Amino acid sequence: MLAELPFIADAQTLMRRGKLRPIDLVEHCLGRIHQFEDQIHAWVMVDEEGARAEARRLGKMLDDGQEPVGPLHGIPIGIKDIIDVAGWPTLCGSKLRAGHVASKDAFVVATLREAGAIFLGKTVTTEWASFDPPPTRNPWNLNHTPGGSSSGSAAAVAMEMCMAALGTQTGGSIIRPASYCGVVGIKANHGYIPLDGIFPFSMHLDHVGPIARTIEDVYEIFSRCVFSHGSNNIGGMVPHRIPERLFVLRGGLVEQADASTRKNFEEVISKLSHRFEILPLEVPGWFAEIPVLHRRIMAVEAAEVHRDAFERNAESFAPRIRSLINEGRHCTTLDYAYALRRQREFRELASQELHKLFADNCVPILLMPSTPTAAPNLDTTGDPVFNSLWSFLGQFAVTIPSGFTSTGLPLGLQLTYGGWTGENALIPVANEIEKCLNLSLRPPLLRASKSEQTP
Image 1 (cartoon, helix red, strand yellow):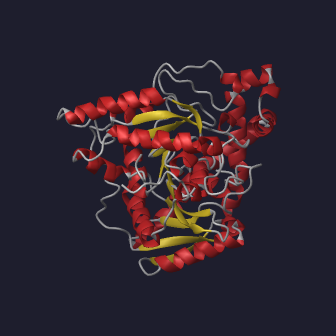
Image 2 (cartoon, rainbow, N blue to C red):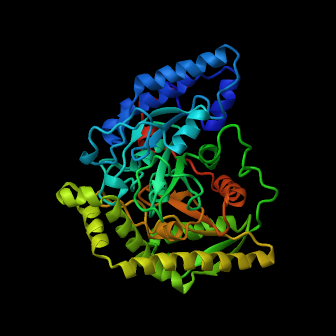
Image 3 (cartoon, one colour):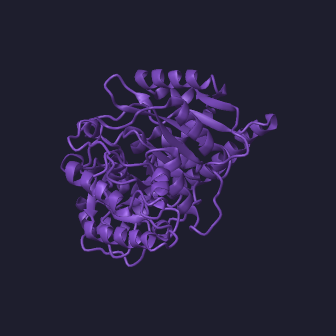
């Protein structure tokens, strides 16, 4: 087994030179799964033989002098278990889905398959991608949550069980677990990546996006989720000019961060001030209404998705998703309509206010902590309030690791963008910040592993 899993770009280079084979990557990931899955519980199913067979097929293509299938040729990936992979079950963390088998790939899975990715298996989600705690553990401390609902995806990436994984976000289910597990996640603008073949939670809030170990890696996956491998690169890693000015959100909801998170955030801002001009941006007063409106939309739309099953057997639903559905069932039509109207108004208002910054030739990139605290204990998936803002507004967001608490739990820095697609400005800035912070991010279980070898 490899001593460490290479990053995606490095793996691509080594495979092109004949110094690494897809089967090497797959065997490394399967080895990590065998070694740590009993502690981490990141996987619903692992298709070992299918992954090995695909790795051998892709390896033979390279041996025969054929061109790679696509830019992700031979890269092992995990798929969150609300996303369809043809021939595999999509169980959504619920016994009510027993016996389900997907008939075709979800859009994002099809694009990754076309790009040459190898699918290792399905990663754990909380039940129906909601708030009830999963069996998955945080790789940095097994007594803490990995977050939800993309818990298995984030934990698997952190533990080198895959090179990247797909997650979804309705409130904070990409950004939060990525932050808690010390990895990187992207949530694109609402509607930017098609949701075909993904079990729904809330049509006005659902997003899909990748989780990986670095900005460069996560962007490799993100760009293929948006376009097929034959499309032009969308340019996120090669901007014309990295913005020189960043905005730090102050006041309002941001003040909910605990002392450890605030300390880390201020240290990060101090470091970045040597590279960027950092300006404060006061949180608008209307942000305070968003958490209530967000939950209302989520509750009503979850109730509609699960209407038939819930009416037949409400007790088959875990306590927190059951409570949310009951909220939705008792919400008035007027209150739901009001929440949707305010969502449209707030999205327009946010766009207008942030685009005022363009008058000074600024790119509206905003910085704030990814979460109010580091990963809490196992009876919760954590507080999504810093993420649900951007899910509600439908704006581009990225989390990158920013440091650690005194007890060694990862913390994250969240970057959001006030424009439409976001990647042309935000991804290069996140990449630059990642380089500035220069953090070592291997969980203690990996560092202490007896299987670590010298290449």
